[in-house]
Length: 184
Ligand code: SF4
Ligand code: SF4
Image 1 (spheres, protein in one colour):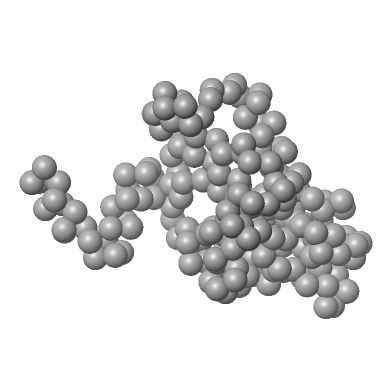
Image 2 (cartoon, rainbow, N blue to C red):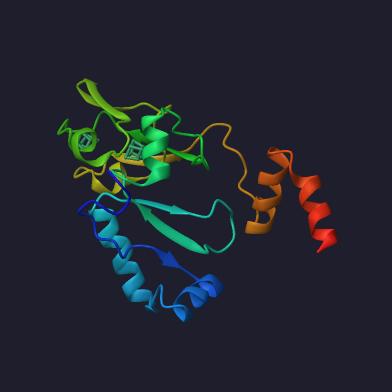
């Protein structure tokens, strides 16, 4: 399915600060208040969309709510079986198997990447497939699911500039980038 051709609500991308002003001035976005922003997040969560933000510890500049059916990144990670290929989450879901009522809602309706199975009766999360989206946590009627920090999870860059440097360094492009900046 092409991006945006599904039945999900489309006005679910939140942009902040300078980038928001840039888009509003050009007619691609409009201002909303905090209450409406929170309502967008609640609706997105109910609709099974995955909150994603910039992978740095500073203030978010964007919160996208990705469609599991047609978001290029989310669907690509799932279908190509590389769930941690892109900005891997530092969290994974855990199920309290004692309190789990085995309703299978998390496996059948909530998890967008098929990371939960009911093979042993109770819900079991496969951490290799879990992307830490939290939809099974907010949607479990028994509140038996939680997110926990992954063992060995990388520290998130302090801000978006550090993130950019890290990406360039990992790709071996940092020196080239610095040369380019010095010329301009
Ligand atoms: S939704 Fe909650 S109670 Fe139902 S199977 Fe999943 S973890 Fe268990
Ligand atoms: S957090 Fe829950 S819903 Fe999200 S990918 Fe992991 S197991 Fe699936």
